[in-house]
Length: 451
Ligand SMILES: *Cc1c(COP(=O)(O)O)cnc(C)c1O
Image (cartoon, rainbow, N blue to C red; front, side):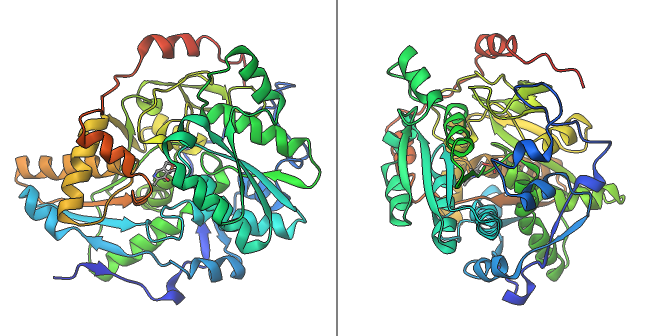
């Protein structure tokens, strides 16, 4: 009864899988927030190095992973694939459940898979300093780590509510050499404007993005890095699904359903996109994104052009959105509180190639606790959405008396997020139904773009 399915280090993928040539139809253009015209590479150069801008629009199906990036990947990759024997038994399901575990990275999540190449390409382009934002702190820790590996300075704008809730993530960033500021901060025009209107503002990912983009755009030595949503981020994360596919082949299995939790879409893209390629070639496989009911971008948002950030400084993209000024409630899965979604994932959902569903916070914690008590790993609150999705599939298989092979991505562990579990055990965790009125209000403010 094999439990861990492992690959040797020389099986770390040598190329990332770029889904762009396999998309159902052309990509919508990305729009400049000032001119409302399609952005050009020159518009993006103050913010990103050319190599990443090229990856953003590349039509090459396979993109080589630079050797210095693979060398750092070796610290935790290939990541193990587990067969969840004990969870299956507890559920009494005929389904076979596999999970890819991305919590073994130094930062404890999938995010270093893209932080490392982003730091590498910046270093190669002469960048000295990175400005970025972080919600719950996982991206900030990953970028701090990556900057440390490549000798870059790093400033992180951390959403203020998380700055208070998750102090140890701040310690991790500082340990890896980064400067951490609660956002909204006094460091930027965007931050100062919000504080002038609302001194108690607890921040949001959209506000923090505005601050980091402004910081990068106004300093010659500094560029910006984003931890999700963008095409190049989804590209880098495909190491997850590429490895998983090979690991499943080692035990002679293939998933009927592939599941990932969905915040901005990157870990979902990572596990899912390599299987979308198979689906395009006629394989029967369902690919499901699971999001919180409190921030239901894919299931209750609209597919439209919207700003990537609150201050309307970041480019406008066609994506599922709840509106750029939507303020999601302070739920514990902080990594899933973004108003928008990856344009690639959005287009796939819109075309019906991938499915989306929303689950409530307490149901996710129940799933996380069952998982920790059977499989032993303590999941990140974000990852618990994928676990919930997998358990629902397994229980459905049981009800139908059918076999089913389920693969999900366990995007990270919850070791630095135990306050979320404390809140659950002390009965303080509530479910938030999606605030329909708030979404309606925000959707009235979408930019008028017609491309
Ligand atoms: C950031 C994060 C997520 C959500 O981000 P995506 O870009 O949607 O993947 C999910 N799980 C963990 C552990 C995270 O840190």
